[in-house]
Length: 498
Image (cartoon, rainbow, N blue to C red; front, side, top):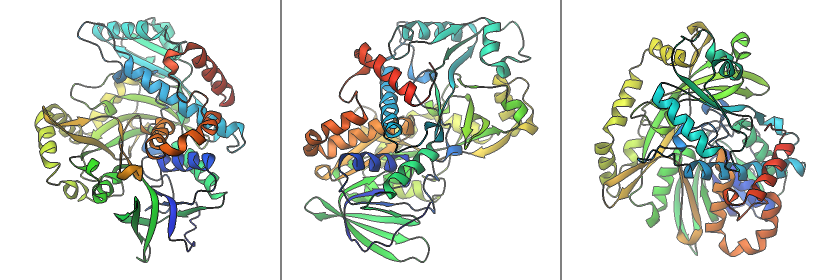
């Protein structure tokens, strides 16, 4: 993608830091709502979407809780808690609506540029897990957001849904799966590029690639001085911003700390790296057409739930299995080994030590993952694909994730899984921290940023917001009629199934 850092402007209404799906989504939303805003985006790499938004750096799951078992925990009373699953699905429906609006208005030529229908499945084995999945299906099947989900323990049906997974599977083990046709595979890299192209096509937007934001300081009047350095040549530049969004993935935490806002005090980060096994052998790929999620190992973080995914990237199909978790002190895949130690400060060290104390199971799990051999990885894969041959699969490194650590009055500190928006300085700065479901819920997360940071403009933006997100302000899980309308409209516009 072409950078255009030739502008002589030194003051912008909005500065976006980071070249991924979050900055691109916020920029696109703001451009729909107020076309005259001056916006500058600074990305430290030579193109957009090269970190976690890159297609092979994530699993591409349109996270909607159709298959992710970690969103439906079992309560002590034996019932399945579906509240988080409902919230995640509602969030994804907002993303679907925004994407549909861009397709309907001709701003994105075809949803196939970044989105493909792929059935979402949950798959378990063993009596206890089969019972859990049956309870989960019973709790979800009548909810309007999950209508159309099927459950089966019949091996013939399972073989129809996932032939590669069932081929040559040892008999006698209790198996169960759920299947939903409305799942998606999302190329967030392609979507990011489409959104940036939309912004570049309008006046008032400046794309600065290979430019690293090194510092962020208050400039008075709720404005910010942003210090930028060119990655090639080292030229330095300082710009003034009325609003700053820090959407730099794992790199957001250090910049948030440099901002000095009180809301950043006590926040730390725990980096988790990951790897996948990838298959592009067309004979193998042709026998699997689903995203199949299992249950996480004891002590594993939620983002490490094993899954076998069909991927469609630039028209080519492939399979991805993993993730295999690991540990790195980098906050970005292209970051520095000093990222973690540099982030430790007096205000967050207590919380980080408390998290280390309380998460020994996670530490043990990560050590085991780091020490895995290739044969260990293949053994895990063969739980899903009994016929897997190592010559068909290659190991690739996924994007880096940084989980949020926050102070806690009772425990000293807690490790959070998910995403969190931190805002401060009268709404003139916002940062996005955390990981999954992340990219899938970029649109609702950015609507949260708008509500917190542009509250005075929301009344005048309301009509335009409802054009792009008709359910804005409505809980779809509590409005069956609106839910049905939204699902059907977006299904047709985005050319999805179910």
